[in-house]
Image (cartoon, rainbow, N blue to C red):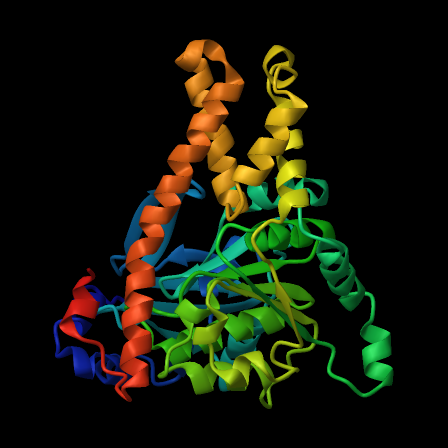
Length: 428
């Protein structure tokens, strides 16, 4: 049956009535076909197609609209927007109509010879678990996307490059390494095989790098969440999509970075329920980071089974700063690195107190740039000393507005008022 103009005619009605009008017209045109419809986020039809589980062709008499874009990580990508496909699947011929209007998500209609066939196909697509062993899936803007660049960065991370105080590194790595080996033990004790770790501490002190190291060592699928927000779906829907994907990919690692920025008063209860509700999170290792644990709800921080352990990543102590310095100097050309005396190394270790690892890294990168430019006649000792003074002043200037705001907040709290003033909002 020819259906020229079907999609354009359907989209020409009020957006609130499109899905109903499409259903009505399909039922009229195909009275002997079973029709299943919806906009379920887990109906990942194109992923199912790309991995070869069914074959598709555009319906010849219906114009199809496909959006094409390019990204540095994934190259050229296509996303069907308003398309009607004929589908060959397990000896059955079905049809799938995809419509997308007003950024309200992709709606689909499955046409099959019988309702059981339509439902089996729908179930197969929704339950399909792609092999994400050699990639990192990133959730942003309401959709999952493989990120080859992030996967390469993860694979390049090495535990030996990570400097942490005391036994912190060994303790965290051992904790995480044991989890995936302990399924039988968990189940024998009647405990759900899942675990959550919260990594806290000032920014730039190794939390993210440790996660990369863990993901590289464990060799499990990694799902990385950038945001719960999107134009297409509510935050509750996005959280559901995230955990549904994690359950399909399990055993896997689910990363929630900057948790304090992800959690709001509106999505809090929904996230708590997904972390530790009725749904089965078997095989999910959840790793979350925050620079501001004080901003998190105690229901997240203080209740094991959501986040079972909290590990604090402090600013590097003197031993850590000295180790970082020695490693860096070992990497610069010998005639420069060896020229830095023991006395100066001790001085630099002491003068960088309060520097995060991120600041230490910037110290050495800026010093290398100055060295390459011939600053101070190529004297590395003088260059690094100057850069320490510059960065120390930068840290002080950056901290002053926050210290001032914190002081005003403390006074306000002491007076019994939590409402910010206009001065607070605009800064000093």
